Length: 191
Image 1 (cartoon, rainbow, N blue to C red):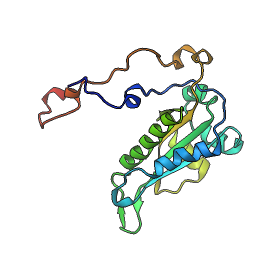
Image 2 (spheres, rainbow, N blue to C red; image 1 turned 180 degrees about the vertical axis):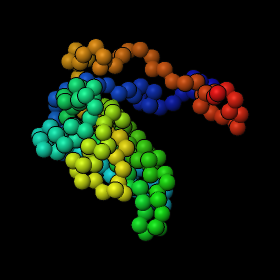
Image 3 (cartoon, helix red, strand yellow; image 1 turned 90 degrees about the horizontal axis):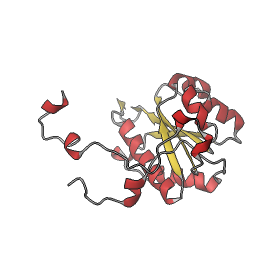
């Protein structure tokens, strides 16, 4: 069953670290966010929020860039779009926490990844950032939680990266077999 045919774009998607400095147009940027907007969400709550910057938005770019770990700064500096994905963690109308907000953000970012592929773009998501620095730099309210950062743009040459930052290209991507991710209630082999 492992060779079950799936959408070619899903199977061939990968996340480079090398990007060209070719700018994205405002229309392209908003197409990505429009794709995110149409994601499924519980009770249509849409708890996802985004901050974004392009290199020509110098102050905003610096505030976002400075929250990254040093390893990510090395390659993100060349990307044309930097985005932070955040979630609203509390529903004031229901007076309750939004327990699955991170899952819903994941659905919206997944839509963005698909849209980027349709547009000939790539995205790389990162957890290597300091949420407290981002929160401080943008005065993010306490009910909004930074979850992920990512870049989008046109793939560049890996020659622009140091050896550690390069992503293997041309190798078959490896994923866990289905029998390691689908369970019937027997969790013994996880131990």
